[in-house]
Length: 526
Image (cartoon, rainbow, N blue to C red; front, side):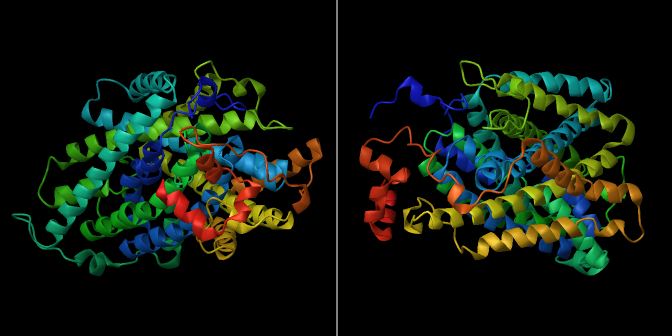
């Protein structure tokens, strides 16, 4: 089948379907890896110790995997603006719930964006103090704005290659860690698991582990971005399941690998970790490991690598944040954001949404008065609890979708992608995120610190207030299973060559006549 110009643009949102399967897979695997992991892991290591770091990455990784199973089922079936989190909450629970999910997700990405700008400016100031921090910020602010306005194809290509560089850099550090720990670095001792014994596997007991959960949720934020990108993907029926499968390897290789090797090569009481010095947020565990091994110039090498990851992370943050607010502004029948943010130009670029999102990067200027470390702590706490709210919301949406699907007489075998382990994955994700949202501020209770307590928990009551106010003003109600629309929002892959292949992506009544085994075989034959 030929691909017409009209097929390249989403008729509802106006965005261009320019992302390929390789773009989406690399976004899922390494797209949002940045200072949050490479620098922030230092704060997590200092707060909890190497064992707490592994536990935190492992527990949050299991939760992230269940969330992605739920999201994969939804985004593969509905690869449109409805697969944004505001759209999912609006469609399957209650429009007021969609508003809560959408704005919490936007908070995550403007917080991440500000932190990445903060880190970029700090790195360049480390190399040269001739230009003030705000000068570096303004330079990069306009550069990233210009690049985002180039469109989705430029974004996808940049993210693919930058993500590849990030993966290769991490793997190189893993090999170095093995050599260093085993005594293969000339002039350096074989440290083995020395730092697990002294200063120890745990630094602050349960309180430290709870703090690590907040850090780790921030590191994992972004695995769910494939749902936001689904609308701009050429062939979501193929690309989204492939991207969901990549998440498992991201958890094992990127996160668990980083947690293990950071804890292996860096003591949790090392001077320079984020929690150790509020004015020095650039001391990545990678930097400290290289310096301890005798490579004094390692700080420059790691900072260059972090700068590359920052470029990718800022790029991704503006993209995800702008699309989130775009789809909220386009929501029907009730808008969740101002109407002017709903506009896209003839190339499918949401210019107002991009500018609006990038403006929140100015939060990075907190660095000028509070120091990079303190600014980082403020931002991490806000985005951490928002992640738990959004992830819990995804699980609830999935539960509601399954209930509506079966109650309206549809078979699970008709779904193009089926979540592994449902209903366990759905209910586990919901309960786990509720618990984590409540315990993530554990360390603020003893001793009680009012400022940190507010920072850790403020978004929970604010989310409740948004839900109630939105509900009262717009007189919304929680949808019943038979009221939920399970049919609209499905579409064909652009590059399908026959109607038979298209039908394997779209849900149709004919699919119910095939058995599940034949459906799976036909998909893999492609």
